Image 1: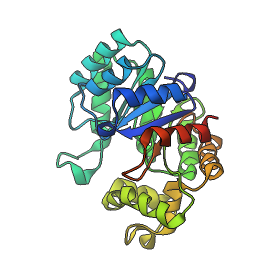
Image 2: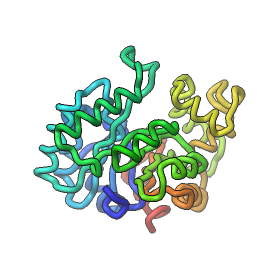
Image 3: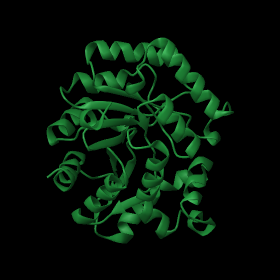
Length: 278
């Protein structure tokens, strides 16, 4: 799937927070794609629900966990969706993280084996991407898929990933956003989301490669780390960060909007669309 099919800006959102009316709203606002986060099931039932409710929006998974759903299931689901909604679905795959799966051994080999099985199932290379942070999986993304979908990274990582991938491969990083000009309040909301990842080695190893140290990873994350991972502030600040990803080589940025529990989600996405698409 290409940048023109995904659009430049999409929305990343946990599957349990997505439904058909919200997908229709995002399409109406002009977002190019919605990424279904939180290891959606390989039966892709939610993906189909979102596609059924829309007509132009692309839907991607961010990501189907290769330890949880076998390639035969994912492949059959892909073909079912392709028959009903041709050209609108991108299968994002990943290995999650070792702390969450006791089967987590030789993840690179597991991805290669899964891609082999998808080849056998007839899932086209250009319709799948890998969640990739480090250079080995980034290279695999370039060799065996349409590209890479890095999660919880920075524009600096985007630039480094583009160097590994080369110029022609899709690069679609996720970027967290808080539309709030109060730094203390915005950082508190950001930490609620980021803190769980501070104990996951694939993320912390990546942040260390980007120059963050022990002090940044302690006590819920330093302000420096939080500000690097979650852009917060006014419209200009948010748009500048997304533009930094694009200038660094991203083809598409999947924006994850973080809001307070009592926020009106529809209005929040309308505000975000005005910031990024207006």
